[in-house]
Length: 218
Image (cartoon, rainbow, N blue to C red; front, side, top):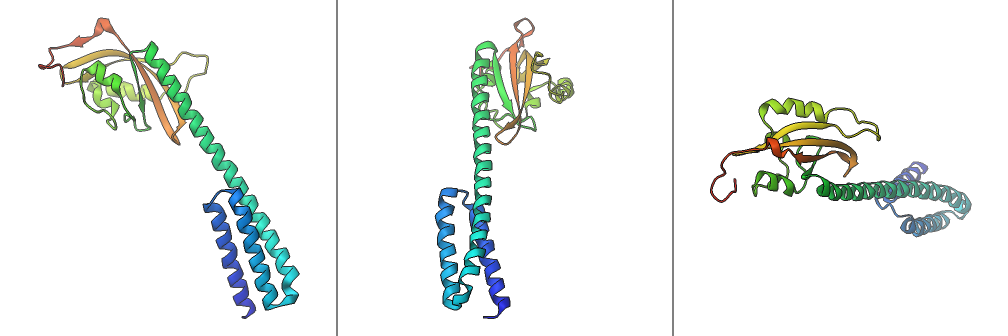
């Protein structure tokens, strides 16, 4: 083989080793893999030209060190991100459980203000079996309340010592209309995306409910 062919083959093999380390981010697996590949490269070079044994060993050892360093850094980064996401999900789940005890309900919205996950509290308040998952939350508000709602949700985060902002709205579905106070906290890194946690407390004095269809389900 010519020198150009050897260089091309070596470059392809090195790129494949880097790709393998990036795809399989596990340093415990990559160490024996890199050791085996280095030995195979050295053996092949020795069989082709015994004088190239030490240069090949040196080059492949340096390549293996670089590949393992990249693999280690990637693994640390991935594990840290997964741990952060799990901690964030656990924290939000615990917070939502606590909110159910002090408020009349809570709902998680995605970055587009669509309902994310189950919203049993909405079913209870609006007396319906409708599945709100994926539905735009503002569709439950009167037309004149949608712009204030967007402004309210777009407000910058408040200091930790400040009480969360509050907005008075009416949740509506069919003939049912329930006045509530909304409290909003932004969750920036939940599931890798920005979400909004909205808690609401029913205003019993302003609750306006017309007659519901027979059976109480809309």
